[in-house]
Amino acid sequence: MTEQKLPVWADPAVSPADLDAQGVSRRRLLRRAGLFGAAFALGGAAVPAAAAPASASASAGHRAPGGDDPCLAYLVGDHHVHSVYSHDAKYTFSQQARAAAAFGLDWMVFNEHANFGHARYGAALEHQEIVEARAANPRQLIFQGLEWYIPAAEHCTVFAAPGPNEVDLLTRFELAYDGKLLNYTEGAAGAADTARNEAHAVAAVKWLAEQRRTGYVDDVLVLANHPLRLGIDSPHELRNWRDAAPEIMIGMEGAPGAQGAALPGLRGSTSIRGEYENKPSAQSHAGYPADAYLTYGGFDWATATVGGLWDSMLAEGRLFSITTNSDNHRTVFDTWKNGDWPAGQNFDTTGRLPDPVNTDTPQPGSDFWPGEFSRTHVGVTRYGYRAVMAGLRAGRVWLDHGHLLDGLDVRVRRDGHAGRGVTLGGRLRVRAGERITLYVTVTTASRVNPQGILPRLAHVDVVRGAVRGPVTDRDVWRAPDTRVVHTADVSGRRGTYTLRVPLRAGDESFYVRLRGSDGNRNGAGYLGASVDPHGPVPHPPGDGDPWADTWFYSNPVFVDVVR
Image (cartoon, rainbow, N blue to C red; front, side, top):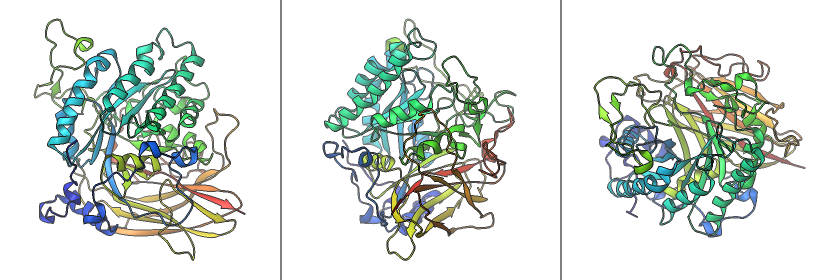
């Protein structure tokens, strides 16, 4: 593979005068972390697959307890992007890659829909383009992935580290385990055999883990996509996938793509952000309330509900990450349409759509370009493909919409002890009753976003939940001891500042996570004001301008109390 180069904002050879406003801000953050220049040299920052830890706790990214996690640089990415190699998209590979670079993405995953045309032809054709793009633009990290139709459930992102077997892994997996190809998905002939289908999904995750363990691929990761869009990803299925291989199945989309779906006047009076416009079906989990099929501040109900499904999984004491992404198929207000098929050809015979054609007239769409609105930030100490995957696995992740923040650093430290503290995805061991402090360093937006708005963060919320261990009922979606415990009004603050929040350890372990918004639209959370006094709320149907309701979320930090 072509030698990787640092992105321009991280490259000491690039003059600050040649950076745009976003690059200037990111370079400042990199310098503040002490990683500029040789300290941020190219490298994997990951354990070779053959030497990967076998235990669930280690392989899930649970680092050894302590208080001195490294300083991090955050790389911005998107793990859910489609091109002409998906049957329902329209953009060329090059169009998507150029847009991602223009909007400041460091890494991206081409995550094409599974079907026979893709498995037989498209995956290999796209791989050729990816290899060429990696050589032509070595400053951009481009992964190849697959949008897996999960037997008995929705979709997942599956992607591998670059290497000689990356495309072979994806096509073998697609043909052997994809629910759509096997007729195991909702509405298909084999959908009724739920037990078999759920078991096949678990076997699929285990198979991927085996390919990593044996060194067939350097690394592979799985993330559930838009989990509550149809309500067919039940809590027990999410837990089963996670438990099958927690080093592989690392999390889910906290917010879906299609964030432009409810721009006023765009798609109609019933449209909802994320295209969450569905009702329960025969395959939906009966334990979800009707309100689960909506987005809240653009985020999936499973994530947006304080004390809800995501918290119920974290309350088991195990990391399960969230992300956000574009899921780009068709960009809002775009003027390109799908090209016409030559006679006798279709997707099944080619694995690739015809190139799009510019009409100069706006076409239907719900999406934003990669990096235009939704951003997933992954903490790394070095630059490269394996570093991104290691950061994702370790849970060093925060996300924002609308470019709400330039930077976020989170640390939990024992009072009176030296060290940098434990950061996102990490674990801190303390004694019962010990005083600890949460440090939240925010760098506010220094430039207008792609909509021409200078975002302003209004508040930062600290969510705390008790860790009670594995649940008896694997379909539970409530964490009754999780709530917002502190809110900081930061509406007048600019630049870089640090919030200090005391967190005394009680008799049981717990976790803390962060959330905040521009303050434009909030109210009592789904489980009530006593749990979440000013959380995200659903927008009126057809009136969900995403730029006017932006949020950030972070992964948790765990605090393990010992006696």
